[in-house]
Length: 194
Ligand SMILES: Cc1cc2nc3c(=O)[nH]c(=O)nc-3n(C[C@H](O)[C@H](O)[C@H](O)COP(=O)(O)O)c2cc1C
Image 1 (cartoon, protein in one colour):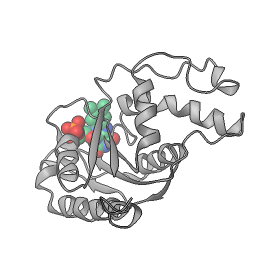
Image 2 (cartoon, protein in one colour):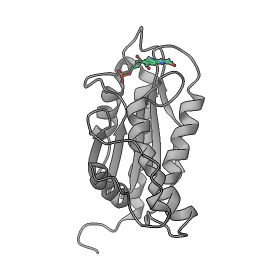
Image 3 (cartoon, protein in one colour):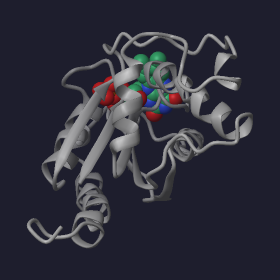
């Protein structure tokens, strides 16, 4: 089982990173984290080549990320809430999913063959709504052929309490991990029985 996690925070030891570490510790199989703030991946430039050609015209680190998306069984979007939305680094990297949108809409091909499960982790300094960020995360997960999305795990009020001390969020991560691990339990044959 492979899980690909997008971390939208530029803070190496921030709240999102802490929750990502807790989730990863509870996941079976391989876990890969894309640190969107330092990945050096450019935003979509709307060149429109993907309307007629497979893949993306921009040659950068996104090439490896496309391969990881296609191979993954689970995708997780983890982000701080920025002005009620997903963070700018996260949206920059995932703007490149336009190549998938164009494959489906204009070229009528499915670019991500393997359907996946997904989860969303959000952290916010205050107690404002996380609804808009979750809606955007769902749109992006659907672009990656995530067909089953776990309810969001949200830690509010990180201005007064670090997310890793938020017991409701930490226990939510345990349930999210169990949901994602279900693929390992039921989706794949046992080692040696393939
Ligand atoms: C540009 C920016 C915008 C923010 N907007 C919000 C917001 O709309 N709502 C909120 O609750 N917190 C907001 N915050 C606070 C962060 O979400 C919060 O500090 C979070 O815990 C940071 O997570 P991190 O340590 O993983 O980066 C904002 C922070 C920044 C830098």
